Length: 217
Image 1 (cartoon, rainbow, N blue to C red):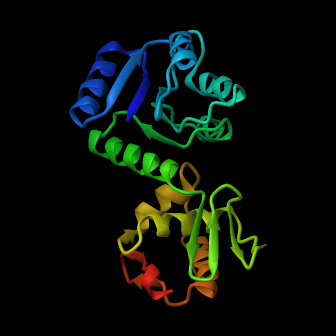
Image 2: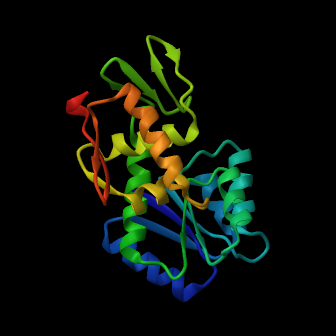
């Protein structure tokens, strides 16, 4: 797997590059968006890892320009920013995830692997009589969209990706709410909604979280 790392702090960039290469990734590192553009014109990458605060243009603008050129490479933002608007703007232009500085390298590795796993999967997943359509972001029954909503869809997608594994409340909040404030009440509503379709598959782990088991569909 090939990663393009865009980080203007050279020492920090070398640290990330060394770590990821030790984990088996092929990493090319650049320090400004224009150098990144040059490489994307001639190379294919499996993942972009972009800092937000950069010279000339910020990382959000850099990714937005690539998305306008129909580049759909999965992307994770590195940020030291705390403001919610910057993070939401990053998702708006096509970012897939973000991680805050100082980076926990183990968490970074988990996020990269999860994103690459999602991007390599089929856009449609059959769940008993239902079909989970990643492109249309909806659940289908007999070809008809059920319009379950974006948050319930994200929750169901998370469950399917972690089939059989217990997920803590914190894991669910980070994955589904991302930079938005999580709500216990909203999560319970979404769980109840999904249980209408998968009453046997979703298990409540009292005091911890939930587990989805497709074998129980």
